[in-house]
Length: 72
Image (cartoon, rainbow, N blue to C red; front, side, top):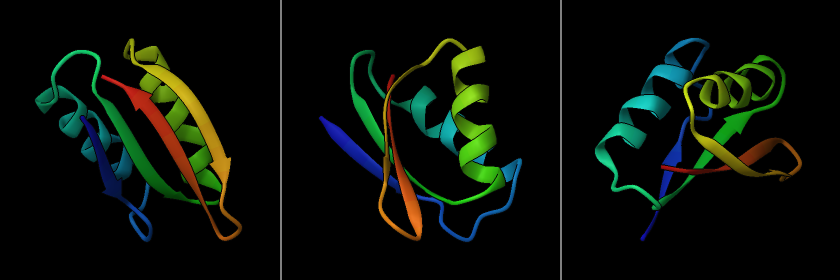
């Protein structure tokens, strides 16, 4: 199952905390699409999730935001 978490407009580090909490609720192997603003959020969240052991599978530029795909 794939879920989407819209964190546009959410500042760092709250967007990382919310991403991690959502991933912890999900079953292993599920995919989470996280919508993040440009700038600090897309620079910080992928690295922080990788350091926590999550697999960042894709990062797509949507123009004014990014979609980050992370495997729980």
